[in-house]
Each structure stands twice: as structure tokens, then as C-alpha cells.
Image 1 (cartoon, one colour):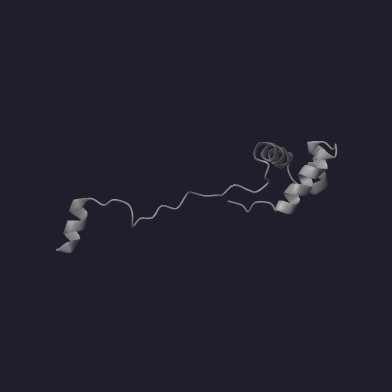
Image 2 (cartoon, helix red, strand yellow):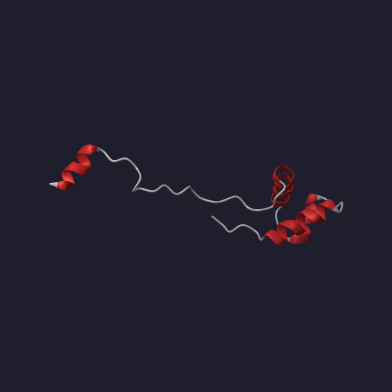
Length: 77
């Protein structure tokens, strides 16, 4: 996965749109995709924050996962 855009860029894009410019104008001005501009406006309206969501899968510790009795008893011998 790619790296998320900086918070400063996200804030500048949203501010540009709030000044009355269109999403496409903002995309051209900041050299980003129109979809990125749309997503930033939606994210700001829904959560009030421009922080990117975490990427990837949540970490699961293998040491806390239950093991079958047959597997662990076979190693003890």
C-alpha cells in the first residue's frame, strides 16, 4: 500500500474547497486526484478529522491463540 498524504496537504485541500473552489479545481491546483479531494471532504464532514485510517490487518498475537492439546503434548515427549 502507498503512504497517505500529509495532514497539511489534506487540510489545505479542504480549506481550498471551503473557499468556494470546485473539487476538480482543487485537484488540479494541488496535483491530486478528484477522488482524493472528494474523500477528504467526506472524511472531514463525517469524522471532523483528516487523519488517515490505519492500513493493514490488525496484529494478532500467536502466543495467546489457543493450541490443540494433541499438538502441544506431542512436543513435550
